[in-house]
Amino acid sequence: MTTSLSFDSLPLCTPLLQAVSRLGYTTPTPVQAEVIPNALQGLDLMVSSQTGSGKTAAYLLPALEGLLAEAQTMSAPQKVASPFVVVLCPTRELAQQVAADAIELIKGTRGVRIATIMGGMPYGKQIASLKGAALVVATPGRLLDLCQSRSIRLDQVRCLIVDEADRMLDLGFADDLQLIDERSAQRQQTLMFSATFAPRIMQLASGMMVDPVRIELATAHDRHDHIAQTLHWADSPDHKRRLLDHWLSDVTLDQAVVFASTQVESEAIADELRARGFQANALHGAMPQALRNRRLDSLRKGQIKILVATDVAARGIDVPTISHVINFGLPMKAEDYVHRIGRTGRAGRSGIAVTLAEHRERVKIRAIERYTNQPLTVGVVAGLEPQRSEQRSSRPSSERRGPPGGRSGRPGGAGGARSGNGGGFTSGNGFSAGAGAGAGRPPRSAGAGRPAAPGGARSNADGFSSGFSAGPGSARPSRSAGAGRPQGGSGFGGDRPAGAGRPGGTGRPGGSGRPAGAGRPAGAAAGFRSGARRDSGR
Image (cartoon, rainbow, N blue to C red; front, top):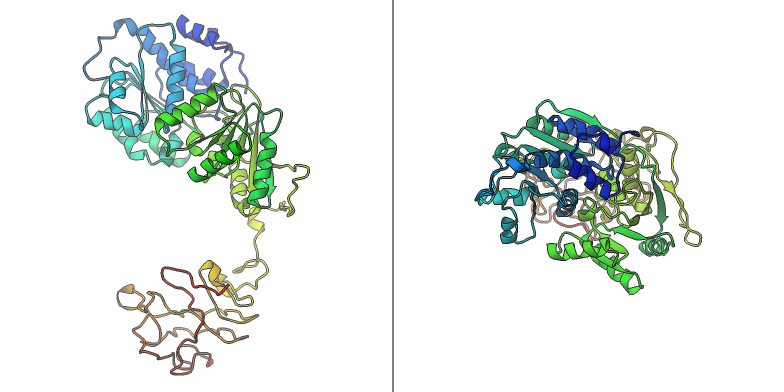
C-alpha cells in the first residue's frame, strides 16, 4: 500500500511538521496516513500493522498535537503527577525508544514534558521526573507501583495508548491492564496497537474501548518484501557456529543482532565472538537496567557491530544501521520471529534475516512458515553444506501422516496405540517394554481397563502400576471385555504380598501372565516409573 499524501497535508501544528522535516521524513507511511487523521478526531482505534511500519509516530504525532494545542492553558504542575497522555509498552527497551522518539518530536518547543517510568531503575529518580509531565511512557508494573504509592494519578488521563497489546498479554499483563483501565476510566480516547486481531485482543479491546475503528494494514502474515529471509540447515551446533561466523564476516554487514534462545546462550555466544575478534556484546533481561542501557547506546553509536540478544530486545530496538538479523536460537513463539526480523529493514531500508536451524528444530521452522504464510528460502554456503538434506513435502499437512496409531515405520496399533518394534519403547523416552524383536501390543477389548484404587490413587510402591515384561518374541494378548486385575494382583486394587507374582492367566486371557509366585526378574522393565526414567543400561 502506498500513499501520495505528504505530512504538510496532515492537520498538524507547525512545530511538529518542522520536527518531522528535520528528521528527514516527507511522506507518511500507510499506517501514519490512516491513523493520524482518525486519531485527531478523537476516535478509539484498533490498529494492526507490521513491525517497522512507523506506528510509533502514528500515535505520538496526534497525541503531541493535542498537548501542544493546550500547552498554554495547562495548569501549574500539581504535587502528584497527573499526566494527560499515557503510553503503555510491554518492555523497558520499547518504552525507552518511544520516549526518545517523543522527545525528538517536541525538541525546540515549550510546555510539554515527557517522562519514562519502568522497572529496573531507581524509584526516586523516576518520581522526580514525573513532576509536571504531560506525557508518560511506562511499563504496566512500575506504573501501578507508583499509583499505589500515590506518586502518580491517572484520573486526568485523556488518551491511553497501548502499544504491542499482543506482547502485553504474552507477558501476563492482562490484570495490570484492567487496573490501569479502571484508574483512567474517565479518559476520552484509547488507541491500541497489536500485530494481529486475535480473539484475546478483541476481548481486551471490548473491555477498554468504545466502538473502536479497526485499521488493519500489513500484518505478520504479509510478506516483508524489503527483508531477504534465508534458512540454513545445520548438522550440529558446531556447524551452526561456523555458519554464524560466515554471515558475520559478510562484507555487506553494517551492524547485526544475533538472537539467542536463553540468557546463558547469549553470554556464551558473545564471549566466543569476542574471542574470535568480533565486536560483540550480550543483552538479556537478567542484566541491570543501567548496563542494558549502556549496551544499547553502544550499538546506536556504532561502538559495537554485533549485539547478541534474547527476545527482550526483539521489540523496541530501532537502529537504522542494523543490516542483518541472525536467528541463532529459534524463538519460542512463531510470532516473535516477525518482531525479531523487524529489527532490520526499518524506515524503508532493506535488510537481511538469516535463520540457522538444526534438523531437530524443523517443527519450529514449520510453525514460523505457517504463521507468516510463506516458506523460508533454504540457502547453502559453499563449503558448509549440510550433510543431511531436509525434504519438504508438497502435500498438505493433513495428508503427511503415518499409518493410524503408529509412527512411520512401525505397524499401527489398533485404537491409536503405538506398537512394538524390537523391544517397544526404551527408557530413553520414559517408557520401557521388555518385549523381544517383533513383539507388538495388541489392542484391548472394548471396556477393558484396570479397576481404580480407592480414592483414585495408584497404590504400588512407585505410585504407578507395574509395567510389562514378556519373554523374547512374545506379545501382549488382548484382554476380554471388562477383564481387570484382581485385588492385590497389581498396583491398582491393593498391595501385593512380598514376593507374590501375578497368578498365571489371571486378568490376562490366553495364559500369558506370570506363573504364580514369580516376581519381576532382575533387570525387567518397569514401564512407568515415578519421579525418574528407568536406566536402560545403555
